[in-house]
Image (tube, rainbow, N blue to C red; front, side, top):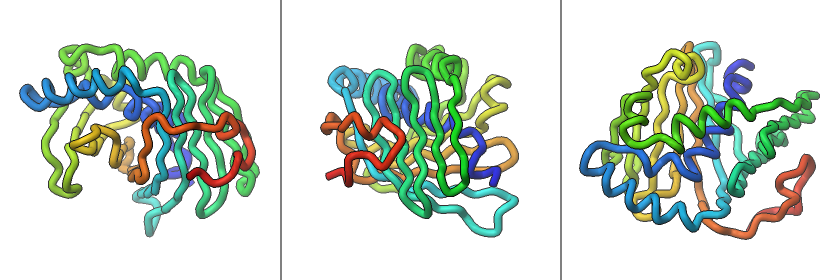
Length: 221
């Protein structure tokens, strides 16, 4: 279905970016200063991150949301593994500028060069100053009403090139750790993808086997 395949490379790149570097460089005047200073200090020591997730995809073409579950593994500077376990197993890997998708039940296996996409994400999100970031996006940050204990950062692209892939990005950040609690992307046509994160662990040991196609080393603890 379109909602399951639209913007897969964008999704993975945004997961990588939001977890590792993008989120602190967001916000309005007062809140921005606090988040930026705290985030810069935190990110300096962040090497890996693991979390479980629930992914909810919606589309005007679907009568009900599609829900999937799995684990995400991140290793700086640019390795990401999304390992889905439910409703069926599939793996999305980004490593060395390549994205590999393995979806046995759908008989899908593909390898794609995403180096250019990663560089654009780096340019727009990570390397930008606050002023540059606001030249690319309309940015709003506030304490979240729907998820207590989090900040909600909303980004609406200004540039046509970005709008062609995503029309809105919402990030919920834990107010204490600034680690991601949830992320929702809205795509052209009205499709949405919401990822909620639990058991988020910074600098947890990450077995290299998680970044290979296969079952991995076993359940993460």
